Structure formats: structure tokens, C-alpha cells
Image 1 (cartoon, rainbow, N blue to C red):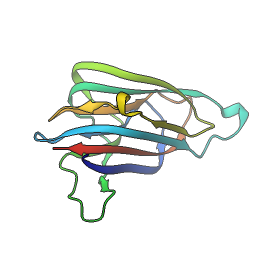
Image 2 (cartoon, rainbow, N blue to C red; image 1 turned 120 degrees about the vertical axis):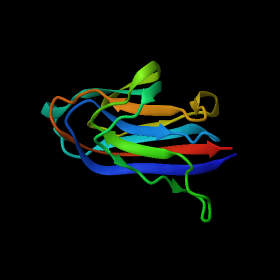
Image 3 (cartoon, rainbow, N blue to C red; image 1 turned 90 degrees about the vertical axis):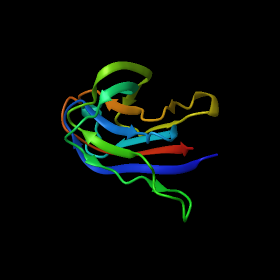
Length: 154
């Protein structure tokens, strides 16, 4: 088993389609996604209910931009820093290359989205690979927080 890391963001206004998370793997490592958690705290009434499409996509060769870096926190005391990088909330989405959509979910924003992969369904990201978790554009601005749990091997 490799090292487990958590990347997160909190209280971000999402107004358009974005890359909520972008994992960039180091050239000598492999990564594996374990969990995705999303919640929003601004649209809570029946009239504001909507379903947003969330996708897990690999294959892009150009990184997104307009967001920020997220320091991946190791779960174990004394573990090394994550060798790759994680970006969050890129308003210009990753592009170019041969995109492959691995999963698509519908997130009803009135309830948190919690995806915990079984060992057989965990997505492996190759060395120097890039994986994004994207959202479709909401009807209006929503305040989103998210956590990504992943493992680095190698």
C-alpha cells in the first residue's frame, strides 16, 4: 500500500463549469483515487434544488488554470510530501489530448455527494498522468467545499 493523501477546498463560489480537482502525478509515481466528497452550503431550499453533472476524466495534456494549488496532506505523521501536484477550482478547464470519461454522476446539490470506490473500481493514474473531477455549470452561484482522498504508489 502506498501513501494516502487528502486534498481539499472550502467555501468556493462555483458559477460555471470547472475542474473541481486536478491531480497531476509525478513521473516516477502512480496514483489511485479512493474517495470524492462534495457539499454546498448556499442553495438549501426546494426552489433552488438542481442536479449538477460530476465527471472523472483522464487523458488531458494541458492543465487547467484560474484556480489554486491545494497542498495534499499526508494521512500518516512523517510521510513524505506528495510528489505531484493538485489544483482545485480551475475556471479554465484542462484540455487537449484524448479525454476519457471514466465516471459520470448526478449530484443533487441539496445533499452531500460522497463517493467511496471499492478496490476494484479505483481509478489508477499513470506516471505523469492528469485526472480531473469536473462539474457542469450550476444554474446560479453555489458555495462548494470538497475533499479528494487518493494514494500515491511508487
